[in-house]
Length: 237
Image (cartoon, rainbow, N blue to C red; front, side, top):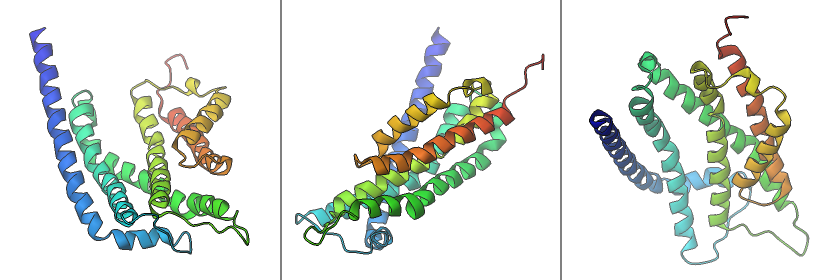
């Protein structure tokens, strides 16, 4: 009993140090990103082809600060993933020790794929749909703060969603996820993807929710394929 308590305390201490390190890194990166926030904002504004507006004196600063925090969060993710891998996964599965570098690289690549899909496909389509309701008498004025929140939420949500195949790979390796879990459950997956897209989509319109749901449903079938290939075959087969 005493050994278990000591082990738990040691793991909590490691977790506390890791969280503190990530927090310090996050703040440092946020300050660095703020220095380049105007340039990064220009990259997002290209999706609009128009200028943003500020509805209060402080909104411009809040918008740039929010953009810096979003960017700092993304840049901190690889370090957080490495600490999670080192202190949580490896102690339980030592055989995976040499997989650390490739796993972090693949995770970063998957996140980038999700974010790029959002930037080049989903965001232009979603923003174009919303702005398309302009009339001769009604012109859409886009708040800088809300625009950054919209873009940041969608890009990060898509990036994190694209980690699902990697997670499915390891769950299948451990034997916790099997192909039978996916069989005849596509209707449940469709409902789950719809609900999840409604939660993570910043706007309540059906169009953007549907745009988000399609990649999530596609990831479900990719995970099924990964598990089908990776999951160990039962001895009787």
